[in-house]
Image (cartoon, rainbow, N blue to C red; front, side):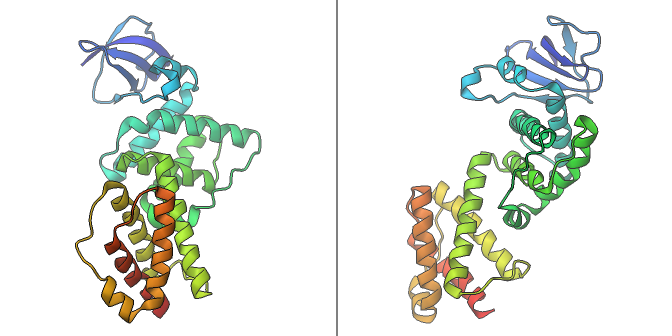
Length: 275
């Protein structure tokens, strides 16, 4: 594939235009920009990563987007995506610029000694454990490339970007889902008047169920089992809690929760009651 260089970002990163269709691409590869100038043509080899830049609406084009980010963070984001691909095989490269943008702000916070707390770290560890493990490993990449060592809390946010690349779900939507799940677990604890054991298998299964319940609600996927009548008779307390959670979820998502979800959720809650 032949590309026409639009801008040299650094020796290892280019913004280029694909010959033929004129679409913009970010090319990352060792020495790919060395000795090159805008307007030159470049043919990529197997060692070059090619990304389609996804930009914010107000930036209009990739040139505006890359002008706003130090190229070292774009290069670092590419290396993190490479590390993630070793674990997940395939990940959507559309996360390159959003991740690079986040890394730039994370480095700035480290430089200015500003600590950004991530209250959802326990939830992220359970829901997106593999993504979080990659994010923790990527701290050495970030330190090597930028000189900054990010915190575990920052790694949690990077894990959400990695998950976004796996699910094609915006980071903001994943964060919203995580917050909803956290609220749901708090509702259960308040009604049971006890703190649940986060390492317990039933706790992990419940969190996973809540996450996919959010996904199903967004996509309109149906649950093909109606346990409501049975659960209402056998486990009224669990059913009551499930109704509260579903009502909260419907309000926050601004979507109707299918009735079958209530009884299905209550079964998982009952396991926590019986534990």
